[in-house]
Length: 573
Image (cartoon, rainbow, N blue to C red; front, side, top):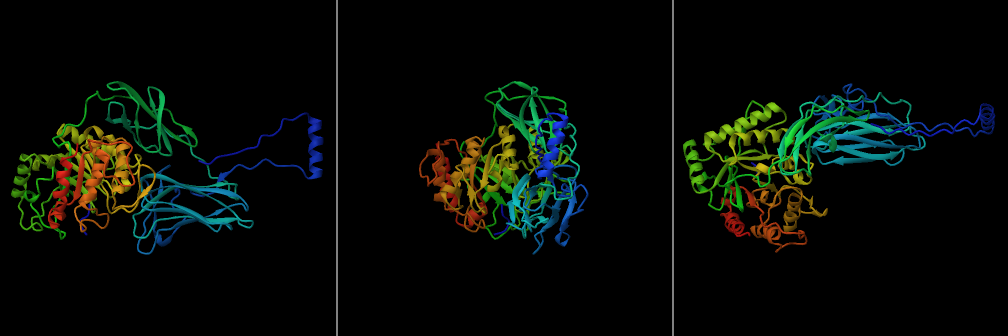
């Protein structure tokens, strides 16, 4: 929300010896005629200090933009973190010895902001590839061929101007030995510790564990049989039977092999018929109320129209304790709105059947929950605000990264404190919900049994993929329906999916759609009518509804959004 407008080795098989004398004679004959062939050399990783275990040795980073970090890492104990600044895209490079007329595979694991991987000086066609940013480790890979006189190339990685820092780890330039040989390979990792069960449904159990140094992947076992694999420290085992206990363990893997299994834990799936208990209507409208003045109409909570069923107070503030939040009413910026009035207005809205929740994050939010201590601090502090102000729940609007493992733990702890009446909403950006492997999507699925609604922000986005694999541009009914389809078919219940849009053209940098487009999208998804070129394969009558940023921008535009969308949401089947 905006406050402002291992390498592969190949060997030839040798023929069996037919006899001592004949072998000598044959060898001699072949030598004379020049037909002796040598075994094909094995491919090696020609990159040096490929995992940054020796700091920045063998690497050069422009403008001192690169640094070594111990967390997060993909493998081993170190990774590269490089930060673009100004006109510097934080390029880090290494000269690598290669053989002429040879084919090589270049790869690296990246995380964070925009990350590019490429090679120059090949003597043929220089190549590169890139990632638009990810909260989890993503593998980039490409291949190149060297020219007839090429004995050295430059491999590089860099970010993009003005974007967030990126991380890179475990480079490979795999192909014929260029003369430097291959550095010693990895050793089999140790067994993972800290295996715990998180969210459970009638057919799935979510698991998480501690990272293992040197591991590049993990294998999850259910009752001693492999159930799934993961490149991170969490996984969800599906296809289970309701109300049944299972034994789970996990092992760590890398190119050297697989560790012994961890100590087993037991987890039981949920009973049939269980689900989140909430006072939110079947079809609901969510609006964000601004606790600051950014040019939109300043409001008291009492000024928010009755068309809004969930009012998200924006935003909580981070404290000096990682993960913990507090709330500070901006009395001066809100024309003297007092704390006493604010508390009274919360009670009045609740008496009218509305839910008032506290939103965490926003465009400038810096709340980090990435370890056990911060997860506990988050849960305790949010619950304290709920107790103090009477908030019905919490909204997760973290736009600067989210760790699914620890946010799941935090929300589980909060739910245990707050009970079944907790209202839990999320407002991810479009990029966060393109795949179920994304951290936001994983979190939503992890807490599905206590989740109220995900109101994705269908704005400030640009073009994105729909569930049919086609690209759709923001600002259209197809953009809303085709992207919502990803969530609807990706595991969320229709009652947990809402459409989030700006209330006016001033409410976001881009992506505004008129209320009529929002209503058409709702009808398309819920009833199969008013669709654009994209029409879902089925309807979702229990679709939760819509969200807007913000009630203040809605007021600035004469409440045109809520007057049109509110009644339409309530009319859904």
